[in-house]
Image (cartoon, rainbow, N blue to C red; front, side, top):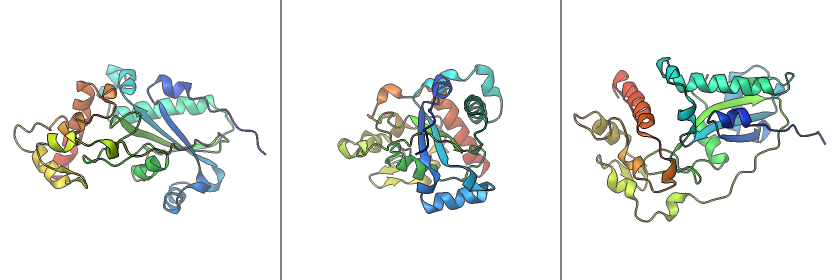
Length: 235
C-alpha cells in the first residue's frame, strides 16, 4: 500500500483559503471526469483533485488593499497563494490549476460531493459550518497521494429553519422554497433605489452561522461586480 503524502494546508489557511477537500479523480462523477479530460493532456498523470475554498472573513482580510486595484483581484490572489502552496510540496509532484483558469467546471457538484453545499432559497449555497458565507476559489489536479477527505453526512441547515427569514426579507419576492426566480431578482436589482444593488437582503437575513457574515466592504465588492456583469450582458 503506497505511503500517504502529508497534507500541509498552512499556507492556504494563513491566507484565508481555509476550506480544502481531496478527491481521487477516478471516484468523481463521469461528467466531471469528461470535463477534466478535455481541459488537460494526459489526465491519467494526475491522481487527485483538490477543491479549495474560503469561509468567512479571513480571505478578505488577507487581501492587501493594493490587490483590489488589479483585474479579478481575488482570483489573482488565490492563484498566487495556490502556486506558493504547490511549490511547498514535493517538486516532483505534477499539478495543474483548473479553476479559476477555466470557469466552466461544475463547482456546485464538487461542493455537494464535499458536503460543503446545500441549496438555498436565494441560490447561494449554504454550508453547515459557514452558512452562506463561503465560496469556491480553486480546483487543482495533482499527482499527489493525500488522504481522501471524508465527506460529512449532514442534512441541509435549511431543513431545520422554520421561519425562513430569507424568503420574507427578499424585496423582489424572488425567493421561495423551490429556489430563486433569477429574472425577478435581476429586474429588482436593476431598478432605481434598489435595496439589493450592493447586497442581498435575503442572504444577509440568513440565520445560519451569522458570525461569519461578510463585512460591508466585502459584500459591496462582490455585488458591485455582479451588477457590472448584469449591465455588461444586459441581463
